Image (cartoon, rainbow, N blue to C red; front, side, top):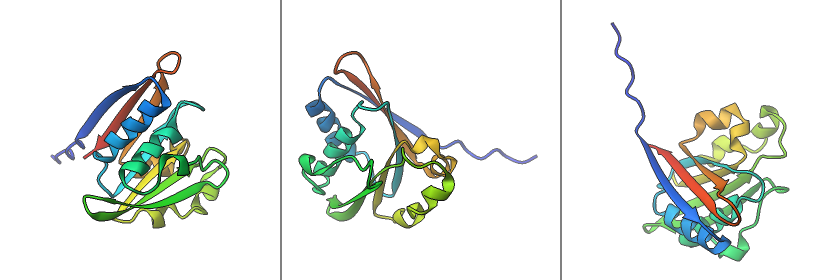
Length: 157
């Protein structure tokens, strides 16, 4: 009889935000939880604050100021150089909303981005099976009425 593989340990963190500034603060807190290498799917409807959250992560890593972080909707990929605990970190922010298939996704070279010092955050990554398979977790941002947002982070150990 073969033994089942042990289930991956899953860590879940929940935050609530009532403004863009608070979402940036949540991103700063999250940066401390994200040890490279990580590939995280950013899930949430249009306008829920996915890019706003990345602003806080980039700021906490000294990779960029919040106002320098913009949505990669049309460029598909933004790259930032930062540091975590004195070690260099590459922060990659992707938006694959406009891509229509795995073939288009391959042109981004996602595998080449997944280096030992990389944090890869992919908006709309749930659309692609290959990204879901490689993901080490996800961040879900959901509207909680008005400007309030519930942010749920799930990380696999």
